[in-house]
Length: 301
Image (cartoon, rainbow, N blue to C red):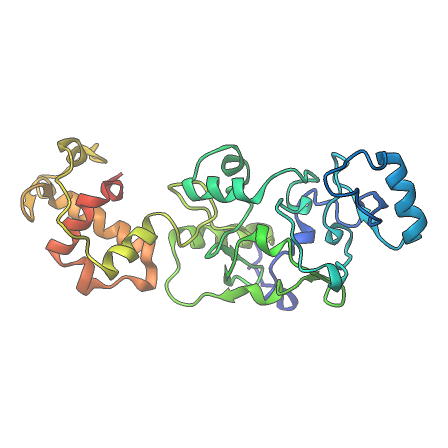
C-alpha cells in the first residue's frame, strides 16, 4: 500500500457546514416572505391567503424565503443567501436544516440541554456529527483542529456570499499542538485509510471528542479543591474495572480506600483525558488523586 500523502491544498481545510451529508444546500424551495403582519392581537385581519397575496404585490419577489422539508420558512443561508443587514443578525431559535437533512423544527435549546446531559434522542442521533466548543476534527492534512463554538450557533450566523461560508466559519478552527489523545490517533489512521476528514470519537461517550465530560471535571477540581471533604464512596467502587488484578495491584494505597491498581487506572485516565495539560505535580500527589476519585468515581469505570 502506497504511503499516504496529505493533500497540501487542503492542509488547513475543515468540512464546511454546507457540505454536511444530506444538507440540501442550494436546493430548498422558496416562497414570498415579508409584507405587513396582521394587526396586533387580531389574527383575523386577513386570511393567510390574502396575506400571501399582499406580500407578493408589495415585495415583487425580492423577499423570497426558503422553506424546510416540512414547509416552514427557514434561514436564507440554506440556499447560500445572506440575510438583509436591516433584519439581522438572525433571531432563529432552531438548528439550521443544513445540519439535519432538511428538518427545521429542532430547537437549539433542546439540543443544548441534551448535549449538556449527554442523553436524549438528539444526542444519540447527532453526538458523532455535531461539534461543540472544544470539539475536534482531523483534516486531510493530518492536523487536529479545535472548534471555538457549537456548530448549531455557527450555522445560524450571517452567510458570507463572498467567501461562500458562514460568517467566521474559517476562523472558528484552531490547530491543536502537543500530545495527541487516543481518539485523535485513531482518527488520523482513519484519514490515512480513507483520505477523508474524521471526527475523533470519545471512547467513553461515543461522541466527538471534546473538552467536556470527565476532562472538565478534572480541570475544575485541579483549579479549586472542593470543601468540605467529600463523603467516602461506596465499597463497590473499589471493584470497578478489575476482571484481573495482579497481587501488586491489590496492595492498599493512600488511606486504604483504594488499591494500587485503581491508582494506576486513575492516573492513566487523567493522562489520556488531559493530554499536554496533565500536571504530574498535581495528579501524582496521593492525597489530591484520592480526593478526586472520591468525588468522581467514574474515573475508575
